[in-house]
Image 1 (cartoon, rainbow, N blue to C red):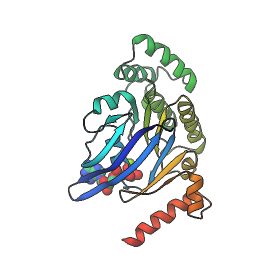
Image 2: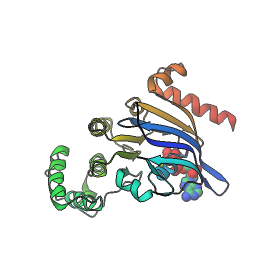
Image 3: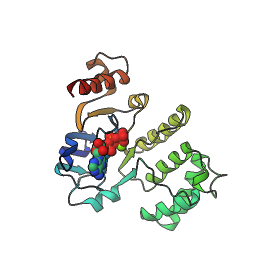
Image 4: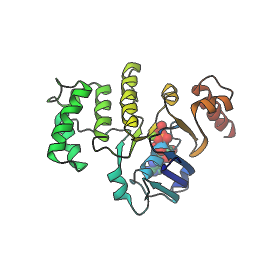
Length: 246
Ligand SMILES: Nc1ncnc2c1ncn2[C@@H]1O[C@H](COP(=O)(O)OP(=O)(O)OP(=O)(O)O)[C@@H](O)[C@H]1O
Ligand SMILES: [Mg+2]
């Protein structure tokens, strides 16, 4: 039996009269890499913030690792990692200081932090940068570090909001290797991206149009259903449908 670690039912967020996230219903299973796709302004970040316990839904329900998004947000925060779209490292701290700082926030002991920061710096090949300010790192390294920090406390689920925006294909592939490593260790990955090659790396994806989920399946099944060679084409067909309806 597959266990759902993220479960939403008609989850909705309104800003005044505007419905940013419109009654989304989905389940994400343990260990899955789930791609949460949609054009600019589709409502992805808004939905993700509710799932992370950072924003109260207007209506609907959701549980994250079994905890309710209305009443148990503190418990949710202990069980997840979150890499926000405008990511979360401190530019004026060094690499090592960032790792220590976030390790502390996530409740790790000094011993654990020391052990994990050494392992992490070696894994990322940042030995020469450990004592340098994060502001001087190339974007791709910042993103890899930001991800690694988000999973330092071994959360059940990690939420990644456009983690690879603006970096080159080689660095994106390296980033995805980190995602696979985490998934192999049982971390469930919920990721938004605008890169359709990355959508292909996901076990299942949903595609959001104007706040609603219009498709949800494996990349393979979606391509079959839309008679498309690529996820780009699936995405384009859905988005074009939305434009016609306007
Ligand atoms: N606090 C807010 N108040 C009013 N409107 C908001 C607020 N936050 C988001 N919105 C609106 O909700 C819609 C969805 O925004 P959201 O940031 O969730 O989109 P997104 O899918 O993450 O887009 P992108 O791919 O550009 O990051 C947008 O039209 C945005 O302007
Ligand atoms: Mg967004």
